[in-house]
Image 1 (cartoon, helix red, strand yellow):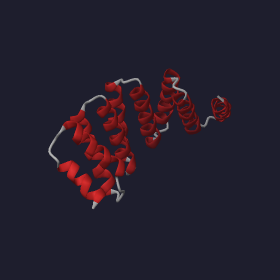
Image 2: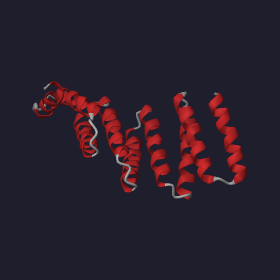
Image 3: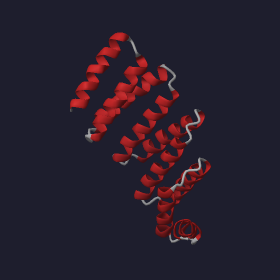
Length: 171
């Protein structure tokens, strides 16, 4: 509650100074605080305010980040269409600005969401995209591989993905 209060104080100062970029990021911070408190309508309200201002200032990173945050809120509410919509928009923007790891993280988050909904085929597609991005960045994608193996077990597919997991982690 203190963090929200302090952010609202900062918001007032930024509004008086006309600092739209700072106002947008402060709304995003307020949204994150409400998200952490599971007050999802207030989180959405603040993320959307941030998104409007970030579009106004053409802050592509801020736009992508706000879209990613909105997807996270809707994921908590199991609103699949909105999760997919906002995640895909965020991925596109992060790719445009060449933010290497962000699309992989979003693909991984999306696949976790799809997996929990028992949409294993789509989850596997997104996990593989997350792994490919991580490998291109030279990052060891432990979580992505681990989860791909679990999706493979749930789907009872061929052992290709599981074998890849075993080779990378046990030999």
